[in-house]
Image (cartoon, rainbow, N blue to C red; front, side, top):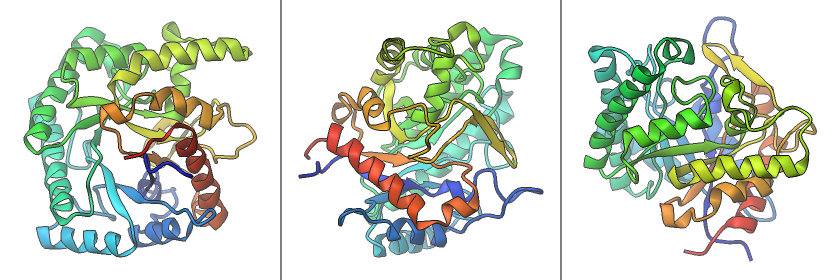
Amino acid sequence: MSNAFPKLHNAMWPGLVGKGSPGAESFISLDRMLELTTQAEINGQKFDGVDLFLFDPHINIDLSDDDVKRIADKIASKGLTVGSVVAPVWPGTVGDSAMGGPEQRAKFVLAVKKACRIAGIFNKHGVRRYGVIRVDSATGPTEWLKNPAAGTKTIAATFREAGVIAAAHGERIAAEGEICWAGMHSWKNMVDLLEQTDMPGTVGFQADQAHTYLYLMGYNAPEHALLKEGYSQAEFDAAYTTLTDALRPWTIDFHVAQNDGTVHGSGAHDKTGRHCLADDPKGKLDITATAGYWLKGAKDRGLRHICWDGCMFPNATLEKAETWNTILGAMIKVRDAHGWEA
């Protein structure tokens, strides 16, 4: 019998991220992403819910309460729940760099506050019963490298301000470690940032299997690499243990994903860990086995769901029913192997 938890969610932002800008593919609407999600089924099992990006054209961050309730009704009517929501913290959205000056940092915190408002409406509606507010530093490593100590100190201060706002709303913040975000671009820098933020239980880590694979390889921080190309399985196991032992205690949100060891960017999104199909023959990860490293003790850290991230998949891939059935199948295997009862 399958475990009850973690609940299985699909991300809606692959319909948005890296799309809609000149030369990029068109957006895929929230309605269509929901439809593709609900159509997936493996032996009677379906996705339990969705994670959302709170930005146009899916969900405008300044929608009225009634409009947010209507979206909640729509999602609930499809038998889905809402989990984690992504705050629009980047320049050009609501927010700005967490490492910037006072005005930029204030915009970052405002984006988190606005995301908490919408999350609260979903909570009161009943469509959302778990999940986090997802952020990152909203600026790249190049500027950070000019003064790493000062950069991390500033980002940590911004994260603390955002954490106070989130806690006041009964929410938690998860910072998604990726090689493209300042102060979060290596596993050691990520641990340092979380320790300097010093809000365990309120500001934590969002682990993505694709992005954290590139942590192992030291893609944007060679000095922190744990593996070299041509590694053995024993070397991988030791490196993955080091990585996850350092970050797992902070992990409060988890993305199931596959990576082939390369990076990818699309539209306005910088190059970051490439998300591959769950059954990609070039995939470097045993998804089920490596997920177990991250999900050890997950229930005690308040994690109630996991989410598939297919960020920057081509639209043609997203429109195929077999894409979602394969993904759902991979997530079911993760839950069967590492899940728990209520």
